[in-house]
Image: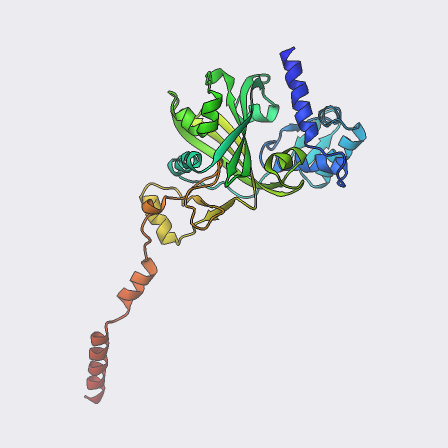
Length: 334
């Protein structure tokens, strides 16, 4: 009975993401939603996409509409469709993952709570969707805690953050805690120890539901950041999907020479991490959950100058150069 209600609730939420009064055809709206889920990693390589009938029920459209959406995915080489097998994701990201310092990422997320305000939209204990269960390494039909929050900055919505935790962890947070603290801070207060995290950054556009939450137009450019946070034993603790307004959220990469990178490696960092640039030039703190931050300004490793030092060693001093020229002239004259 509970599972049936949760399924209906999920279908109603998905139906809101499709605007039937928009100038964009329904099949193309569904194609864009599925495409974004595939390219962001929510539907990983080899996973099955819902059937025509399932998509028809989820989005409240005809089977002809969902068939066209799946056909468009296949034409864009994102999925492969086979009879009696189904529609399977064949898209694989070409770029390798960026390694970054987990300590700095966590510090950036903790800074978040001091620079933005939060409004809790939903809190539910429900059966996880297949894509969410896969991210958290859970079995089919296992329960997750789903938390939907909207972060505000300067009295304007900045982004929507949806967090999922395995219900079996037994973590219970109050509404006041969820509105006052980042999820990471709440997890740190428990006996669980944070170990590693994987993060994916991609671009998408706002559907009807997200556009309403963020006070933007439908199809407005959105920066999507997904992260899976694991314990020191490698067990997934938290899966977060954050979607931010592109006009208020940016990511800056600090690029250094190979010599600087070697210094960073020597200091215990794998690579320099991305840093966040806020909407104000003088803002130092990061602007959202789901981001990776560079070293704090006071802790940035000193820049080495191997090339300049080498040039200084190879270039003779003025006195030495004069002596060399004088010696050469005396030998010639001799």
